[in-house]
Image (cartoon, rainbow, N blue to C red):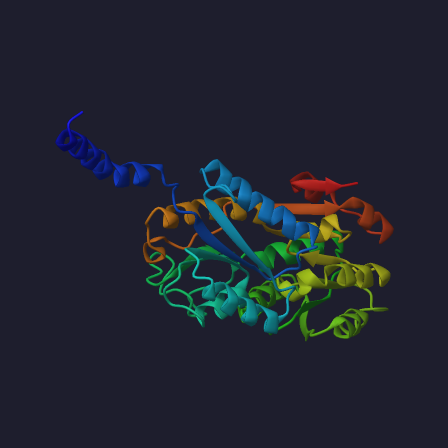
Length: 330
């Protein structure tokens, strides 16, 4: 081969190398942060994350292949939530998923640019997280959970189990449930309809839980509502144990309270919400903006009754309520 032809051939091949190299480069791995206001060793928390990962997998996103997941588990501690929010933002993720109100508030204080998808948030407009439900308008959107009728449904179920119900205490931690006025208004309105006296007790630690619940001890026709609150979630085993010790009828929000030994629960299906969250993550990773994705409401609710606990407490659950239950634990 002549020298000139060889050089021309070599030059042409070299010119194609960059294109070949670019074609062979793997797709960019996208980074997703997850801030959970629960403990990593919480079985229910792992069920929620599993549902989220399954939803992502169905949409073609697999951790370790085209996705990198960075988890932070705050265990209901406000200080850890704020520290982990800062950590996750500093990782420069493509998107952050935030579970429960304190997590979203902490992230909002750290960034106005990283997309955030929230779950289980009450009143995102009232708390200044989004401009409106239909048009969030910023870097935050997600799935809200409050519905005013919850108060009536909780009170009605308790009244069916305890027909002589006269007094109901609601417990929550205001630091982890800053949205509590909405739920209290719903409960108070329902209480007036059922001729029940509503009382409120704030709890900040396990000693408070014992004191709050013991105020009903020895009084007939009393009941308890455990407000949806990450503090209550983290301390649910203590709450359930003390409630059952004092043989009190209690209404919970999350189904796993009933699964763990609580009497009855009614609230949104969070497993379903975590699966649906994967859809919003997928859309944002593909270029859509949180500002244009409306905040969604729950589409599934679940009534769970622990018949074993009812029998232990000496309570009879009416057939109509049992028949309406999505799950009965025997």
